[in-house]
Amino acid sequence: MSKRYEKIFLIGMPGCGKTTMGKVLAKELKYNFYDMDDYIEEMSGKTIKEIFSKSEEHFRDLETEACKQLNKKRRSVISTGGGVIKRDENIDIIKENSLVVFINRPVEKIIEDVDINSRPLLQGGKERVYNLYNERIYKYKKAADIEIINEGFIRDTIDSIKREVKGKIKE
Image (cartoon, rainbow, N blue to C red; front, top):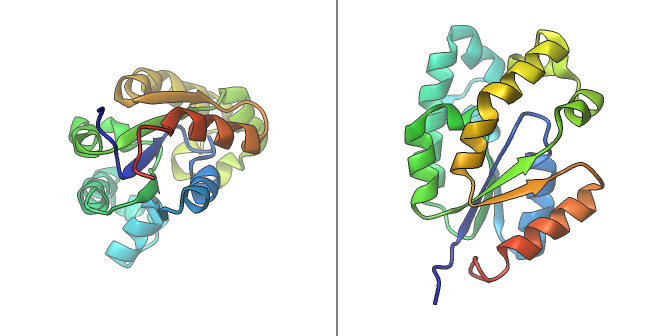
């Protein structure tokens, strides 16, 4: 019998739908839900914006710690920050005993849907979003056990994720 996982880590670009879909997915699977950015804020007692104002490196250190802590949770769906894949250590941690799902949302859709000014790493407009995507796409694909394209309705994407994880997670 193939290995069954108790955790699903959702990875992908900021604005690809990780948190929105993660909440619904967790509820439907009867799993707990954790948003890594919220978890980092609770851990540190600071907002993501405050942490980034110190330095991106400081944020990445907290993110790695959050990966370690969240990796110990059971029966959970965890939506990560878009840059979690920037450190190979984070990928190693989340792949250790979790199913990693890459939600691949076309950049054009992210730009249409997301207030890019409200996201620290997307500030700088459309060009910045394209550059980030091009920088990260290889790492997302390499880290993922499953890739789901999110270009239509949220419900359809959630159903696709559920179909793909069936038989790979503990029910």
